Image (cartoon, rainbow, N blue to C red; front, side, top):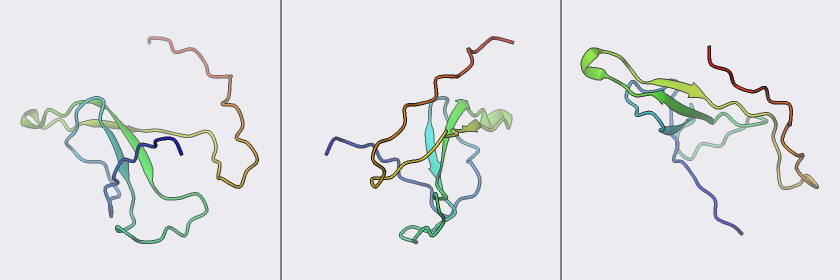
Length: 92
C-alpha cells in the first residue's frame, strides 16, 4: 500500500484553539481516543489556519473548516473524478 499521512486528532474537542500559525492543519473530534465512531460518515473534521494568532494582542488564530464534496470506501468499485465546476477565485 502507498503511504498515507495521518494527522493525530485533538480528541474530545468541539472547538478550534486560540493558538495557530497560518498553514497549520488540525483534526478535531468530539470522541475520546479509542472510542468507536458510530456515525454514518464520521465526526472528525479537518481545519486549516488562515491567519496566525496574535495572543499578546488578544487576537486568536482564524481557522477554516475544509469541506469535502463526497465520500468513498474500499467497497466502492471506483471513486468518481473530482468536480470540474469550481469557480475561479477573484479578489474582492
